[in-house]
Image (cartoon, rainbow, N blue to C red):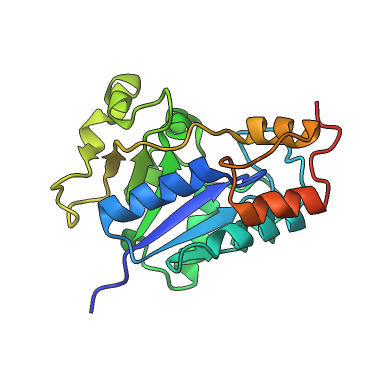
Amino acid sequence: MSAARLGWMGGTFDPIHCGHLDVAIAARAALKLEQVYLVPARVPPHRGAPVASTEDRLTMVTLAATAHDWLRVSDIELAGSGPSYTMDTLDRLEAGGTSLPSLHVITGADAFAEILTWKGVPDLLDRCPFVVVSRPGFPAPALRRVLPTLAHRMVDAIDCDLAARPSIFLVDAPTAPVTATEVRARAASGTSLEGLVPATVASYINRHELYQGVA
């Protein structure tokens, strides 16, 4: 029996918002993933330090995941003390018995545009498939032009051969034009978060007065 096809979506999630969830939904549909794991980073390697605490970010991700029975949450990256590098996480997963060819690393096209700065590239791209979903202003197909040295690895996630060598699957799907920066700013000003984050997350942010005083 083949291993279950899984999705693995890391991020700061400060906070998780509807854009993140749209990326997960689009990736799951395109690659027929059975489950998608949301993985909060303790220390994001390519972004500034999170505003919300580790505990608050994990709680918000857990609340968001309850909206879909195929979403799961992993706290594997919260246990470490240093930057949450995908390469290191894959090492831990493989050591624990996870079949990396069945694990699909999901990311937005805006984040993937910086993939050449990630630890372990290009070897990282040989370890498991990547699924890259369009974000507003960053259409996934444009990555062939942005990253010409990786263009030969990129395939459109429509009628693609899922059994091929680890590839970069491009998913051109609409995702909500929401950023965590915008959510934090609206929360700080007391503006409604409706439509930007799941209702359960909005309630948690308001109840715990997260992001108050954030410039």
